[in-house]
Image (cartoon, rainbow, N blue to C red):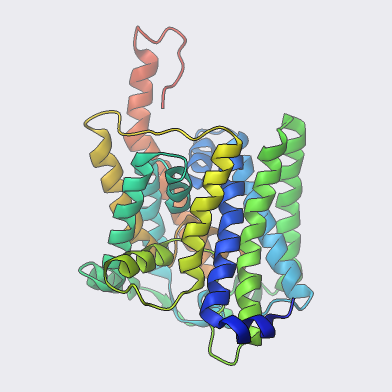
Length: 366
């Protein structure tokens, strides 16, 4: 592919937006078909189950790690200028933001990417939560919540460069990162084969992780062939959500970016996946308590993602695949925050439902 010719003909913004749309469409389709969801994986983990949802997340994450590290080793990707590694980062923001995000994703029953995927499937709860998430993310980025974000971020910081790169800190380099990813990929594939997964479960998990790696590769190619300054970036949903909000409300002529192409791409890909699987269904809120819970969770996710430097995909998978210290701290916070929220908010409900005389099977009703 002649990247230079495409850039000269259409310009960097258009090429980036098309890359974002294509990667997003793949992510949305594969994520919908595999039911990829960090929140579901976290709950299975804290309930001491190694079920399908945890295995799908592990399959996607390990695929992203292997894909990224392979491209680095083959000379097709240089991550030295990636924001997650080169810029000054916040360890306090990553950990606290991850905890807050983890609580929020349990309350909304899905992380930021999952909300967008479900919105395309007709889920109005996810659509409303996604809108609240975008508003809060923008407020935390440059609005009324920005001072709180900045204060928490300043508590504990780390300089960019090797001090923010786990592979450099441990001395294992890309080969160590590749070995790490391959071990977990083998474990996830073993579980998939043993459990007799259907085609879409394991193929969708692999495809979801591959899209994370391709996002890095696509923006790197544009950066490498452009005469303008272009920032290499990965797949994330907090920043693009805020971008789309501002584009709709006040900046309709703003230049197109990778993130602006990503969001409609994910929506379209998920919609196609739902239609292929005959899973499109209009859904709303079930009760009076449900709406406040979803809105509150979306607010926590919006603020937490901007504080942590990204959402479950942006900080967790995209940053995790390049072994950014802050990304792994954020991911740890999300797993801990999600587990605590499930125990405090949902476990009492599950126990009450299981003990109800009407529930003769003893099943836990979500």
